[in-house]
Each structure stands twice: as C-alpha cells, then as structure tokens.
Length: 160
Image (cartoon, rainbow, N blue to C red; front, side):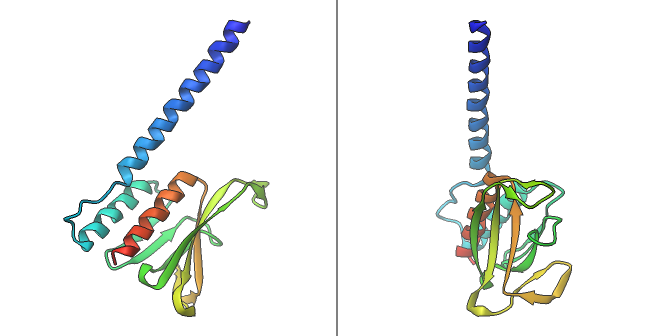
C-alpha cells in the first residue's frame, strides 16, 4: 500500500514539474526580448504577432494595429469587450480571487483595464462604437495569459 502511495505522489510531482516547464516554454516563445536594432514599428508589429499567437482561441476576437487601435471581444458584455487606442489609455491589471457571483462561483480571474487619460471618453464596446466611456475592461480566467497579454500591451504602448 505504501508503494502505491509513493508511486502516486511521484507521478503527481513529475506531471506538475513538466507542466511548469511547458508553461515557461510557452511564455518564452510568446514574449521574448526584442533585438536592439529593431525600429519602434518593427517592435510593435512583433508584439502584435505575439498577441495573436497568445490569443489564438476563436472565442477571443482580437484586433490590434501598429497605430495602437485595439479591439477585444471576449464574448461577455460587462467585462469582455473593449475598443480604443493604446495611445489614449492607461493599461492596468487587477487580479480577483474566486468569489460568488457568476452561475455559482466566479473563478479566480484577471481584469485588464483600459482607463482613458485626461478624463476623456475614449473606450467603447466594439458593437456600440458611438457610445464612449472613460474605462473599459476585459477579463481572463487564465492568469498566465492575462499577465502575458498585459506585458505585451504595455510594451506596445511604450513603442507607440
């Protein structure tokens, strides 16, 4: 009985260690240091490609261009759709714990928040672009993906 227990524990540790190395490989293949000789436009375009690689899921409709215009449609109205320009917003990330509210319990998630600079209304819903607000957000339950997306958006912003 002890042998089965030790084998089971060993297998779990082996799988968890391998999963972490796979996650590191995925993140390093998506976000990588940019060469010094690249122009700002080349850096932005490289990071945009990385965002599309990161968000390759058909559920997340993403559009972003080298002028900073972005559109994210996560399929949810309240914290899932935002359109604007990265030049006009401050981007932040907020991590939320598991909490009541969704169908039963909302999972742990991250919000990427786009807050307009200078108090202007610059963010809208991709389906209602005429209605502007001072803030918009998207939510992701995969915290690693959220963190990588946030880092890429900040890097794109710094090169616009």
